Image 1 (cartoon, one colour):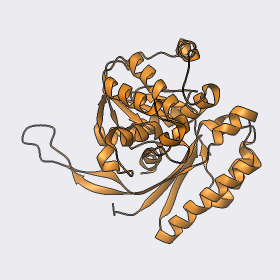
Image 2 (cartoon, rainbow, N blue to C red; image 1 turned 90 degrees about the vertical axis):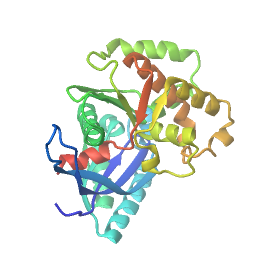
Image 3 (cartoon, rainbow, N blue to C red; image 1 turned 180 degrees about the vertical axis):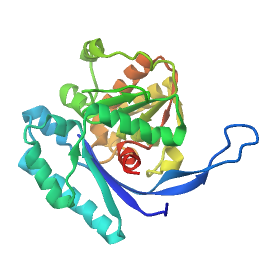
Length: 305
């Protein structure tokens, strides 16, 4: 397969992500002694862009995407389309997640996005999102893992065999609790986990995907700009997570926004995301976890491989 550039767009509750990548041939180690390594196709990112859309804010307030928010979203999609055309890259797929799963005016938004992007996105279920996210991480890090994708409006968890979506995300928590969860958080978590089973997922290697994980890694490593090679596979402990959460929480809103990875509105919701991550890790009964920069946008390309 030639190293042809391909692209996907992930339209989430908080952010829109553009991925430009290529399948490249890499050698793999033989599985048995004396076995010759076999080449395999590995998806390698070439360019990634993130734009904040915060579609979830409208859903939590009115149940539908406002005209102003649709206009902002279309401006983002137009920018992405122009980037793709300038580089001669084929857009293979576009997907919309939790905010659009709940929007009352889905067709209106889909029509507008199709006009701007020149491709009609599809609204995927939480289970499909979990499966595609798991596939993207598995291709880089192998089987026997659990993936957690904390988005703005939902969280997807998968072990490959099963996957599910919890309607809890960093933006949704922020709208309900403010930038730093208070005493009400304990009750919120207890009620949320009543309907969730983690059977078959505990005590396994955990990979965290999504904006919360990327921002956490950038703050932890003091990275001034996103570098997937510096973040991918980064291992952190619960004590590391606690230290970063405390550090961020002790800063003023203005200083928090100056930290790397917390620009463009991420500083408002990051602490909620980290609280939620801690609760999930405790339920999964692990002391460490790893960061992955893969996610739905990669899974969409594997799906079309």
